[in-house]
Image (cartoon, rainbow, N blue to C red; front, side):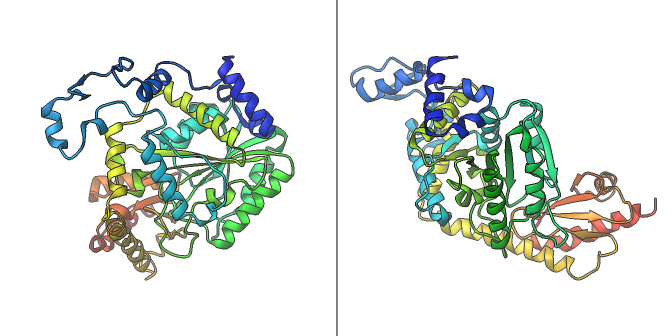
Length: 432
């Protein structure tokens, strides 16, 4: 094992052996090398005459660039576009995102957590967490309503064994007791990764205050029984809370609640700021120990260095510029209200009862999506293909009976026609 990795492990074990036990074999071997990038960082501070360290080209005391490219980016200083970004991300962007987290998550006040590290969007952040904490056959605890890419990230890449539980209980609320039962089913394993995604994809549901409190109680109870938990919050759709739900990330409430619980938040500008193609995300660790936070940050940087080296510098600069703009909050609120109006319209349409013989819909109150459960044995995939072929309608089929509809990409005035056509397609297939 590399001596830097060993030293990071020793620091973690000294501060909290439970966190060390949570690390995967890869996580224990991960470190941030003191190589070219470290030397370049030192040169940036001290080489005031000539800096001949990193592999970029310069001209006229600035990064070399082609005018044919820069002409479309003339509002930006070349230094904010063309050089490599630091592996952890632009420092000013990290600081501003941390400030944003504190403003939007009141429960983080007086909590100890790391400076967010920039990732190549959320999938990359989830992959870092999987690399650091997931060994083959380690249990991944998550609801049965889930984003399909989790299987690739945790199952195919790291060999995790998924343990699912019903997302909703019989009252249509989040199934916190199902969560507890699923975790404790792997008690003999000693550790588990719990993955919580709110607003949820595909259901568009976020727990209310009572449900959130139940989730926290479950996690503490399990930890008190001796299990070590990584609790990973996938906050891809953070902020899009329309109705009776908590208005902050569960990460804020889970952080520092028990020595056996390591909370990790993965989020990003991707969907929060409507810049999907920019691929700018963040990963943040919570621990009461500054030494553990520093060690985990270095291990995450090692993972980044060994995979992508660093995330896109231009994309980070674009996001930073947006966050710094005086128009940012106004424009973001306009988009929020637009999405909220679509969610409200969907509920209005569905509540009229016109489609009750075709499907029930799962409770939703946030995010981009809602999800329906088809009746009369109509197959979701068959309906999806039928709608494509005969009506030019695209929806997502999930399992035998669930269909996800993204109201996020349908204009308010078109939503009624959308559901009418889905209903017509259902009638075409009913009884076949």
